[in-house]
Length: 450
Image 1 (cartoon, rainbow, N blue to C red):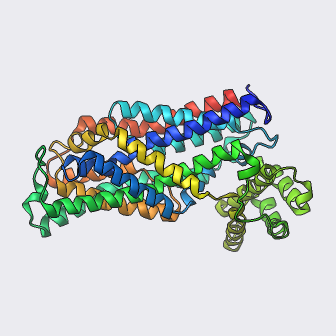
Image 2 (image 1 turned 180 degrees about the vertical axis):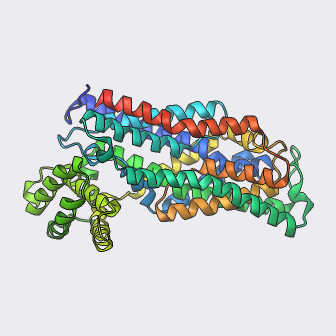
Image 3 (image 1 turned 135 degrees about the vertical axis):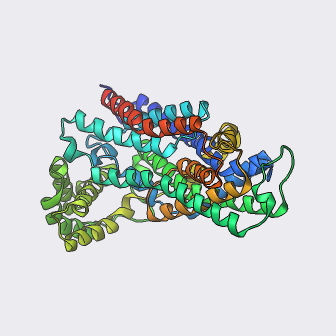
């Protein structure tokens, strides 16, 4: 077991490396996922590669800045509350190393082979693995110590969105072909020849939509990961939202109202911790030695309130009350400074500029038996952008890669050209193995390091 004392120089170095790892991961996310947004405009010669990736990076930045943080903290809440704020005050170095090391390694491996894999799957699998590893570490029952309801909600969204992209893009392509009689839309792009101006304008628009929506959803994921890291680095400065001063009188009232709900419906593995947190918060600020302890107590209560909303034994009135109390408590601990949003967008944008080529070729030539034509690219991107943006504003993480590649596959089927089964098998295998591999590796890493 490795232990990192808060005052240890090794702890500071480890957390600094974790901060570097999260930036590298987002950089890899950029050249892995965001490449899907620029694939069509580059492949059809609508924009030069450098122009396309710079434009996509700017739209990612805009998406991150204008998006919320619901997706960011949907992912953060996959972790058990004692991992988010360890009760002994130790920095969560094992959690961060397990998370970024696993997700980054799998992301780079699939990118090297030109397989459009999902960074979202990598992150979510790693988070689930940490939750499971924490259960084994404390000899807890998996059925009650891991928030399976939250995990199931996230995984369901990831599983449903690719079929929706496949069907939606296929239908949209058929509608375009039926009502839009512009031959240039259905012709294979010629090397070094710019497409028809109308087609070019259409593809630049759809690229813009996908880039913005990617920043709106995937950018939020990186915000959550960066916040986990900087809170570990500087808990006194970032554990609590500086824009929402801690009002203990208000918090005391909220946790008093939460007490009977948590006592009745919380998962038993965390109930004692949650009740102890409620006791401390009811007593007020004088008992808290640090903002990190306050944050930890609030997360314990939030975890208990989530148990109420997912418990079938709770009445609708109790679930609504629990959701209302959680909504009041969250702004204190769930936030993102402007510079964190900017850093997330820059990492995504720079990554897009450097590593897009492999994924562009796969999308343009590898998914279907015929090369991608402009109508197919536009249909897949319009449907993809709509799904991704909708998920971003509802707080659900989805995979840009899987939605766009599924959409391209749907247009290939709709056009009658068929699918390249060899490439489809590679993508499907990556999709199937990502979660088991990342869950297992991150669980083992966390168990060993924690």
